[in-house]
Length: 137
Picture 1 (cartoon, rainbow, N blue to C red):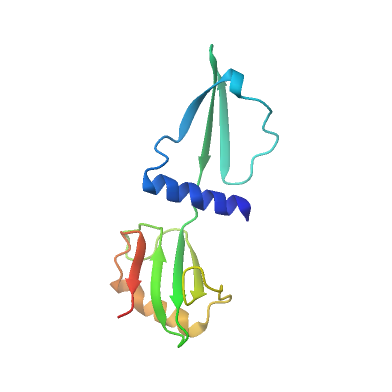
Picture 2: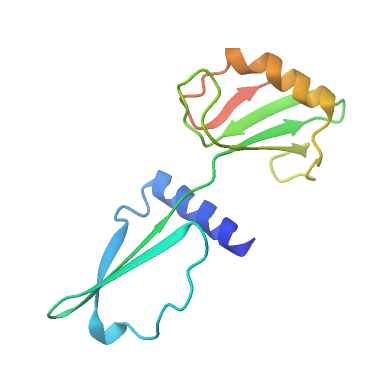
């Protein structure tokens, strides 16, 4: 779970422009230890150079669509980080629902009525954007 949160944080920082380079050169004197195992979704490449080493870490940010459901069981908002332009059905994403706010209680499983509402909204949402892609009137 910590790795997933870290990966999501990296994705947010990349999107915000805070992290602009996927890799940084690090002088050999500041590198210590070794990589014994790499969690799934992460990869490392270490290549020695005459004055130091370069460590490259890459991560894949999970595609997530988050449905915010009101106390009345109706969809209040939908958030997405998929940036898909293919009619609302990108290759892979996780659909989640929370009550009252993006940080609210996780609804698992997602109620059938919420899924039905989501399916009806799919064609009318501009999935090429990220962030809040739908807000109820």
